[in-house]
Image (cartoon, rainbow, N blue to C red):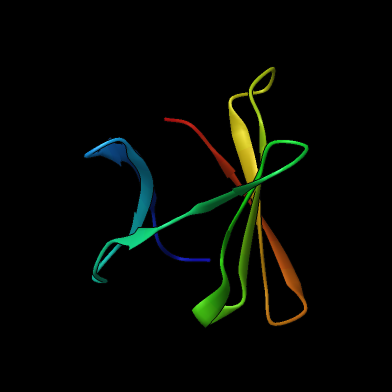
Length: 66
């Protein structure tokens, strides 16, 4: 995907914001998974590799920390 996603904590809540979009809050689930259900977004974090997989609409996209 031709965008960056910033992941950050705001007021004690994990948030994400894609390039050119507004921020959204992530709901925690087991196994380092977070979701934003209104948009069907699932993010699975792998802290060992400093990356996460974003799944949405049947696609899976890998993002690596810069």
